[in-house]
Image (cartoon, rainbow, N blue to C red; front, side, top):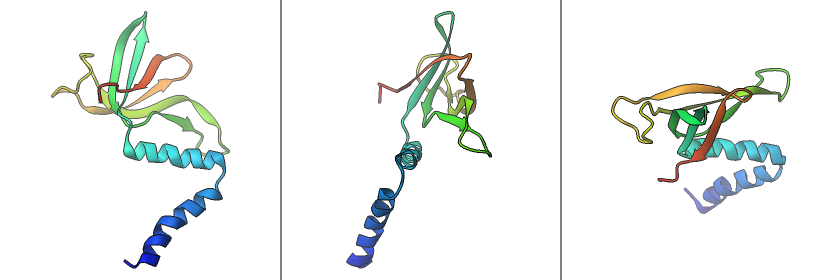
Length: 116
């Protein structure tokens, strides 16, 4: 690869980003975060106690309308390991699952895993 080709390969995406709105830049940044991973933890609470825990979550996403504008839907979704025994570690019988949580009725906390 020549120096000119390398320079254009690195410079072109940067120039393209300058023409994007702040919201578009944020969406690109969130997609990069999803790609690189965040190792998040989501805990669901009931009666002040943790009743479900998902670990190794790359990104918690807000559902959006499939047509008719930029309207957000009242739930979030992700893939993560269901920590069935709530020990904070992936055990041999615990697998990655898809899950959804309601913005209206689910008491939850999402955070980056402090152990990593």
